[in-house]
Amino acid sequence: MSASDESHLVPGRECGECTACCVVLQIDDQDFKKPAEQACENLMDKGGCKIYACRPNVCQDWYCAWRFMAQLDETWRPDRSGILLRSDENGIIFQPIDDPQTVLTADRAIELIAGGVAQGIPMSMSIPTRQGYRSYGLSLNDYLGEAVQSMNLVIIQDRMIELIEYSQAQNTSIIPTIENH
Image (cartoon, rainbow, N blue to C red; front, side, top):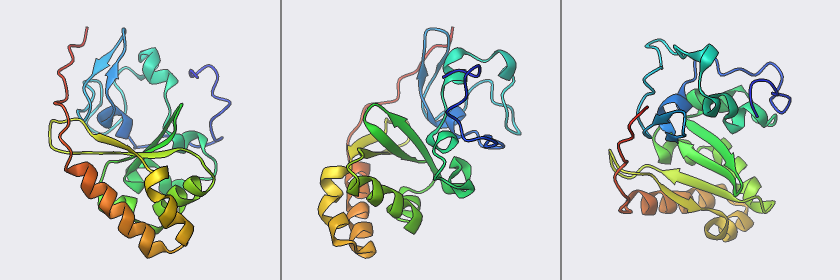
Protein backbone atom coordinates (compact mmCIF):
# COMPACT_ATOMS: atom_id res chain seq x y z
CA MET A 1 0.00 0.00 0.00
CA SER A 2 1.24 3.47 -0.73
CA ALA A 3 1.26 6.57 1.44
CA SER A 4 -2.12 7.46 -0.05
CA ASP A 5 -3.74 4.40 1.58
CA GLU A 6 -2.16 3.66 4.95
CA SER A 7 -5.35 2.33 6.56
CA HIS A 8 -3.64 -0.97 7.40
CA LEU A 9 -1.06 0.77 9.61
CA VAL A 10 -1.33 1.02 13.40
CA PRO A 11 -2.60 4.55 14.11
CA GLY A 12 0.06 6.83 15.57
CA ARG A 13 2.89 4.38 14.98
CA GLU A 14 5.74 6.03 13.09
CA CYS A 15 9.25 4.93 12.09
CA GLY A 16 10.82 7.69 14.17
CA GLU A 17 14.60 7.34 14.16
CA CYS A 18 14.50 3.77 12.85
CA THR A 19 16.18 3.37 9.47
CA ALA A 20 16.67 -0.42 9.45
CA CYS A 21 14.89 -0.91 6.13
CA CYS A 22 17.06 1.81 4.55
CA VAL A 23 20.15 -0.27 5.33
CA VAL A 24 19.22 -3.97 5.55
CA LEU A 25 16.94 -4.53 2.58
CA GLN A 26 17.90 -5.04 -1.04
CA ILE A 27 15.89 -2.93 -3.44
CA ASP A 28 15.95 -3.93 -7.07
CA ASP A 29 13.08 -1.98 -8.56
CA GLN A 30 12.88 -0.42 -12.02
CA ASP A 31 12.84 3.03 -10.40
CA PHE A 32 15.37 2.47 -7.61
CA LYS A 33 18.14 0.04 -6.73
CA LYS A 34 20.08 -0.51 -3.48
CA PRO A 35 22.23 -3.46 -2.37
CA ALA A 36 21.38 -5.38 0.80
CA GLU A 37 23.28 -4.49 3.97
CA GLN A 38 24.31 -1.08 2.65
CA ALA A 39 22.91 2.27 3.66
CA CYS A 40 20.79 3.91 1.01
CA GLU A 41 22.52 6.82 -0.69
CA ASN A 42 19.56 8.99 0.37
CA LEU A 43 19.84 8.16 4.09
CA MET A 44 20.92 11.24 6.03
CA ASP A 45 23.62 11.00 8.72
CA LYS A 46 21.13 11.58 11.55
CA GLY A 47 18.41 9.43 10.00
CA GLY A 48 15.66 10.32 7.64
CA CYS A 49 15.54 10.38 3.87
CA LYS A 50 16.90 13.22 1.75
CA ILE A 51 14.21 12.57 -0.84
CA TYR A 52 11.35 11.54 1.48
CA ALA A 53 8.72 13.73 -0.21
CA CYS A 54 9.52 12.23 -3.62
CA ARG A 55 10.95 8.85 -2.62
CA PRO A 56 10.43 5.95 -5.04
CA ASN A 57 7.16 4.02 -4.95
CA VAL A 58 8.96 0.92 -3.65
CA CYS A 59 9.87 2.91 -0.51
CA GLN A 60 6.42 4.47 -0.22
CA ASP A 61 4.69 1.10 -0.46
CA TRP A 62 6.79 -0.95 1.98
CA TYR A 63 6.39 -1.13 5.76
CA CYS A 64 7.95 -3.48 8.25
CA ALA A 65 5.54 -5.70 10.18
CA TRP A 66 5.91 -3.54 13.31
CA ARG A 67 4.05 -0.74 11.50
CA PHE A 68 0.94 -2.88 10.87
CA MET A 69 0.91 -5.60 13.54
CA ALA A 70 -0.91 -3.99 16.46
CA GLN A 71 0.09 -6.78 18.86
CA LEU A 72 3.73 -5.66 18.64
CA ASP A 73 4.47 -2.96 21.20
CA GLU A 74 6.99 -0.10 20.93
CA THR A 75 9.88 -2.37 21.93
CA TRP A 76 9.42 -4.26 18.63
CA ARG A 77 10.43 -1.26 16.51
CA PRO A 78 13.40 -2.70 14.58
CA ASP A 79 16.03 -0.32 15.98
CA ARG A 80 14.87 -1.19 19.51
CA SER A 81 14.32 -4.94 19.14
CA GLY A 82 17.28 -5.63 16.86
CA ILE A 83 14.93 -7.51 14.52
CA LEU A 84 13.40 -6.32 11.28
CA LEU A 85 10.09 -8.18 11.05
CA ARG A 86 8.68 -8.36 7.58
CA SER A 87 5.88 -10.26 5.95
CA ASP A 88 5.51 -11.84 2.57
CA GLU A 89 3.20 -14.36 0.95
CA ASN A 90 4.92 -17.05 3.05
CA GLY A 91 4.25 -15.51 6.47
CA ILE A 92 6.51 -13.62 8.88
CA ILE A 93 10.28 -13.29 8.42
CA PHE A 94 12.55 -12.50 11.36
CA GLN A 95 15.63 -10.69 10.08
CA PRO A 96 18.07 -9.83 12.88
CA ILE A 97 19.89 -6.52 12.61
CA ASP A 98 21.75 -7.18 15.88
CA ASP A 99 23.40 -10.41 17.05
CA PRO A 100 21.03 -13.20 15.91
CA GLN A 101 21.54 -15.44 18.96
CA THR A 102 20.87 -12.56 21.34
CA VAL A 103 17.78 -11.10 19.68
CA LEU A 104 16.15 -14.29 18.34
CA THR A 105 16.41 -16.21 21.62
CA ALA A 106 15.10 -13.38 23.79
CA ASP A 107 11.92 -14.36 25.62
CA ARG A 108 9.69 -12.00 23.62
CA ALA A 109 11.10 -13.23 20.27
CA ILE A 110 10.62 -16.86 21.30
CA GLU A 111 7.08 -16.07 22.42
CA LEU A 112 6.22 -14.52 19.06
CA ILE A 113 7.95 -17.20 16.98
CA ALA A 114 6.57 -20.11 19.02
CA GLY A 115 3.10 -18.58 19.04
CA GLY A 116 3.15 -18.30 15.25
CA VAL A 117 4.45 -21.86 14.84
CA ALA A 118 1.78 -23.17 17.24
CA GLN A 119 -0.92 -21.38 15.23
CA GLY A 120 0.41 -22.69 11.92
CA ILE A 121 1.50 -19.27 10.70
CA PRO A 122 4.56 -19.70 8.47
CA MET A 123 7.56 -18.30 10.35
CA SER A 124 11.05 -18.00 8.95
CA MET A 125 14.33 -16.25 9.62
CA SER A 126 16.94 -14.62 7.42
CA ILE A 127 20.34 -15.02 9.05
CA PRO A 128 23.53 -13.19 8.03
CA THR A 129 26.34 -15.52 7.01
CA ARG A 130 29.54 -13.63 6.11
CA GLN A 131 30.17 -9.96 5.44
CA GLY A 132 29.35 -9.22 1.80
CA TYR A 133 27.33 -12.42 1.34
CA ARG A 134 23.59 -12.99 1.24
CA SER A 135 21.71 -14.02 4.34
CA TYR A 136 20.45 -17.58 4.65
CA GLY A 137 16.70 -18.05 4.81
CA LEU A 138 15.20 -20.90 6.81
CA SER A 139 11.58 -21.84 7.43
CA LEU A 140 11.09 -22.43 11.16
CA ASN A 141 7.80 -24.28 11.43
CA ASP A 142 9.04 -27.80 10.66
CA TYR A 143 12.26 -27.40 12.63
CA LEU A 144 10.65 -25.87 15.73
CA GLY A 145 7.37 -27.81 15.88
CA GLU A 146 8.47 -30.42 18.40
CA ALA A 147 10.27 -27.87 20.59
CA VAL A 148 7.20 -25.60 20.57
CA GLN A 149 4.98 -28.53 21.58
CA SER A 150 7.21 -29.05 24.63
CA MET A 151 6.19 -25.55 25.80
CA ASN A 152 9.64 -25.34 27.41
CA LEU A 153 11.41 -22.01 26.82
CA VAL A 154 14.90 -23.47 27.24
CA ILE A 155 14.24 -26.27 24.73
CA ILE A 156 12.89 -23.77 22.18
CA GLN A 157 15.85 -21.42 22.76
CA ASP A 158 18.35 -24.27 22.39
CA ARG A 159 16.73 -25.34 19.11
CA MET A 160 16.78 -21.74 17.85
CA ILE A 161 20.51 -21.50 18.63
CA GLU A 162 21.11 -24.71 16.64
CA LEU A 163 19.15 -23.31 13.70
CA ILE A 164 20.96 -19.97 13.84
CA GLU A 165 24.38 -21.66 13.97
CA TYR A 166 23.38 -23.92 11.07
CA SER A 167 22.22 -20.90 9.05
CA GLN A 168 25.37 -18.89 9.79
CA ALA A 169 27.55 -21.78 8.52
CA GLN A 170 25.87 -21.93 5.11
CA ASN A 171 27.68 -20.86 1.96
CA THR A 172 25.61 -18.18 0.30
CA SER A 173 26.25 -16.09 -2.78
CA ILE A 174 27.93 -12.71 -2.81
CA ILE A 175 25.61 -9.73 -2.47
CA PRO A 176 25.53 -8.38 -6.02
CA THR A 177 26.55 -4.86 -6.84
CA ILE A 178 23.51 -2.99 -8.03
CA GLU A 179 23.86 0.01 -10.27
CA ASN A 180 21.38 2.75 -9.39
CA HIS A 181 19.96 4.53 -12.41
